[in-house]
Image (cartoon, rainbow, N blue to C red; front, side, top):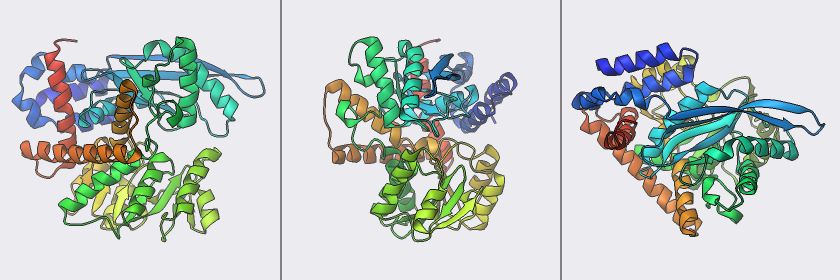
Amino acid sequence: MNSYIERVIGKVNAKYPYQPEFCQTVEEVLSSLDTVVERHPEYEKVDLLGRMVEPERMFSFRVVWQDDKGFAHTQNGYRCQFNGAIGPYKGGLRFQKNVNPSVMKFLAFEQTFKNSLTGLSMGGGKGGADFDPTGKSDDEIMRFCQSFIQALYRYIGPDTDVPAGDMGVGGREIGYMFGEYRRLKGNFENGTFTGKGFSYGGSLIRPEATGYGSVYYLENVLKHDGEQLAGKTIACAGFGNVTWGICKKATELGAKVVTLSGPDGYVYDPDGVNTPEKIDYLVEMRNSGRNKVQDYADKFGAEFHAGEKPWGVKADIIMPSAMQNDVHMDSAEKIVANKVRYYIEVANMPTTNDALRYLMEQPDMIVAPSKAVNAGGVATSGLEMSQNSERLFWTADEVDRQLHRIMDTIYENSVQAAERNGLGYNLVAGANIAGFERVADAMMAQGLF
């Protein structure tokens, strides 16, 4: 590995040993950049990598809210505005009890390169709070969202920072936050948030977009391999918007998703989550607030495996689509033992570094990285920003066409970046390089900052 890259990784590990997720993603990205950095010795002179691995700004704040019984609760809120070299900061808000500075920084760092891959003018950011919406009433969630925005509203805006949804934050939460933002600002800056309801500036197919985009990316991988999606089985995780979108698009194209998962375990449905009733039930499960995937098994008679992950299930394609570090070495070994050909990351950093390296070493496996595969969500958010700024309305078909084009371009740019750097068909390195190069060019052009 290039000595400059090694030193930057070493400094991050030494400075932030208590932020494992952030250290993990810095190492994964920078370790792909050997050939690029060798061609550009000027990067070291201006410490480009050292600047790139530190957020431009990050802040935390107290969020106090009142439950339905009148008791007050205090949570920690965060916003990490990591890199704005190519556009306003852009990235989701996550409400989950495990949210902490390490998770925020890793997500914002990944978001920087993901947004770069889309070709749109969006920098990287991420935020959220250690608030668990599970079991909370609508009124409790509204009060929390209002308090959260009271702390955040001064630092966001259409040309500054544009939040969206993420885990624990959907259309309901975005609506509450936008309403409070509008009250505080006194004007209708609907371009400040994406993932909004259609009635006040949201884009059609935004909830499905990450899942749809991941399937479009997968189609490119299969085409390269002389295969097609129809007839394939897919093992997914989670049952939220992303997995729901995968189920919808995969079913439309003739494949079937056979696993779902939740905090309580996983479901195996050999017939597939491939009927309108089954796919619509995922929305009902998500909106129930119970956060239990067993509900699907109980309703449709599928197998339920309590406390387990679905990575030992034999399927043609594995698509981890729930959360970070969901696939460890033991799961990776099961996937390899099942002779899986396609490992397509969908969630942000769903695979630990050692497991990812192990999977990439398998000669008969193709691995695709999340920052490329799941970019369809933020790409559609970027399209929503365009519609808002120009007061336009695009049909679902038009948004879907543009999404499909962007995902095809991300795939092609990743392939070309890897080949250009002598790395062959390495989709992981290719995505890292393609995302990095655009941000690096912008930073070099803008001087020391």
